[in-house]
Image (cartoon, rainbow, N blue to C red; front, side, top):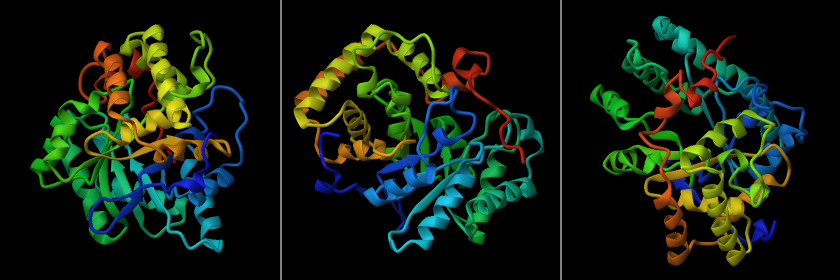
Length: 354
């Protein structure tokens, strides 16, 4: 790390009703048992999560479908509560009913999954639940949002958001009176689909965006600068975001972007990852950015995103690359929603089993 985290503070933002989160959020997908493809080493997850909270990254993101992660977060919550640290942490999870279960989802199904998350996490209330429905042509999309809102009114959920929904789907929810507090979407220098219609929609509503994939699974870090195209991958993130690089324009265009990012990083005494995160944090209607860390020291490098600002000339230099990129095209999650396409084929659709 080129800077000291003690020299700056992780920004926070109020999402409404006094609910405040850190603008950098520690994501838990990389802790999932289905994520790694090799036995590459990780540090103890509880130690890594605790280190993030001590840095001021107090908001944590997991999901019912991240195998084993709610249980890991539950152990972390228990340790944090027993420590002398009085800093409050925020826990976000998701409700993603299985592709094959959608026709049978009802009020009792929703309650069962939410109560299972509460049990795994050892909590009486979930700070935020983010909702996704794989096939909106299957009846129940709007009803399920309403059932989650009932659990919010009951006190089991603090706030309800959505994930990976484009404007047309959010408007369907708005039409029945459901307004999500956030929409978690993939957003990075390589994937700017949210800056189209979604950002404009958020500007006129009470919904903000949380970005994930802002480091493109690690491709937007020092690790890959100047490297040749990989032929093997250590985890599913690299497979997923290698496809995004192809949509962006290929390996050469990606390396040219990294060159400019490296120059900006050098200007500010940070690493490429900090430039990647800072750029997304600066985008319209973005409340925060989710990034993973499985080793001690990783999040300390990431918080350097709050130590500097990208200048106008630096933004223009980045935009010159983006203007040349042919894609990714379409609305958020459009490529991934196509189960038969290359982006959809790497997804897993039935992970919400007991």
